[in-house]
Length: 147
Image (tube, rainbow, N blue to C red; front, side, top):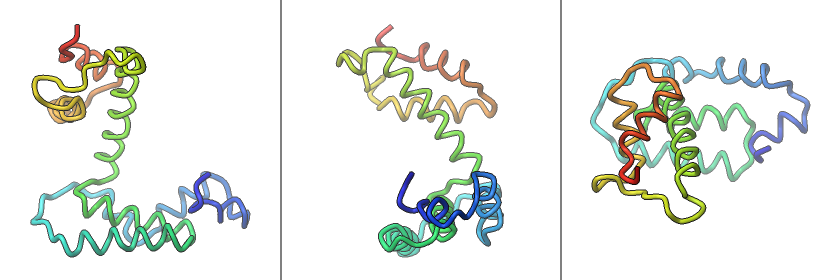
């Protein structure tokens, strides 16, 4: 369990459902559900939200503050809950694909047609709105230069 979630365990604040309810009640959570609208990046605002996240982490603030800071960083980075979930699942499938194709043995090819495999995975996810786990794995298999 991360240090930031220790307060839930230590102070018996509840179970995973209670934590989910806490996150959903955060003032910035509704923004995390909205469609992402590209904006001009304000690097000072980005630095500010990252610094706040670091402060919350290193000062052992309560879990609610950690979750709020994380959501602020995600939104500032152009991610909403759906896109973050899609990236998380995609990265897990890519990691499985790497293991299945020789990552531990050192035979895995990480650069595909001049681009890192993460970039290829992101392109595949962007091309199809709805993609299940098997379809993503199959698309990675199709794109992999080491077949």
